[in-house]
Length: 391
Image 1: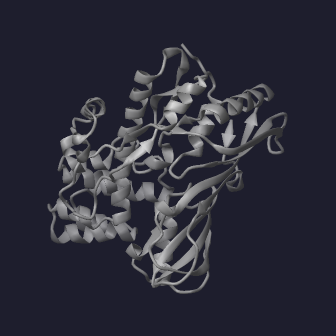
Image 2: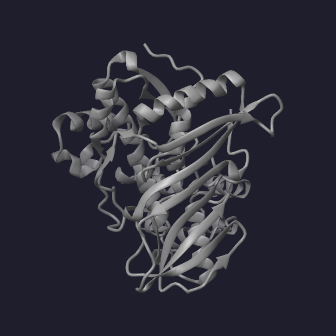
């Protein structure tokens, strides 16, 4: 099985309720290909010499895809922009920054390639089942781009106040999606760590150089050095860890709520998490109304059963809910709120066709809508699992 053989094989279009009108925020459509949302935002800020903090968006869209999403820029220029991997189309003005709450849904069109005839037909059968019962609302790999190849989270060291370790993980630790130049820079940072002048000599990244220049003047002040990291990246560090904990919480909750014969396992970030198949309609209706809270220090006042599960999960990292809070800096914090346990795709259509890229293979083309925050790649994992082995 292969996905994202071409960027056009994975299309995502944001559906929004926001309409242009009047106000101090310029409103744009961002169309990008083979570049992540944070990278595109930073390039826009650099090109127009605008602070990144004035640019707002609703969600992170896949890097290896063809995507459409909306952004606002406070005081942004009323003009279009076209750079190497993305374009901005000016739509008008609006009176507030764009946010996740402005997203109604995301529309997907995905081509899964290099399938045998039998596997393509099996996936199509599973899609019919998913249309009826949905799938677990896990965060997928795209959420965990800041996790190191050893599986460490920047936020885990950060909340423990291990600031040097957190900084090392953020700047120097290898990550699965590092590009060649970044891998080389990180290797040199690891080699010369502590010799900040030498690290500067080997670093071209503007963001990393900002942190290193601070460390040249304050060699051991790793706490304040963390603040020199891009606020967007700092938020991503926290959301990655929070999302991993929530995934484990959902898996445990499903195991407690559903009969063993309805359960099998999916693998996300190397972790085996519970998934369901063949659940009765009455159980689907029950799951539709269920949410689980995002783990943070505020959860200590929540349901006792959920608190106990979360504390047990955090214990794996040597943490507790009480520690899921940052006192410094004030502009970075774990999000509050809850997330639905179940996702039901809307307007799901699919078909099996001859794969023009791979001889004697089939492709599965599917189109559907998901609510904001849900991952199409989890749906793909659900329907293409090599073995669905219910107990």
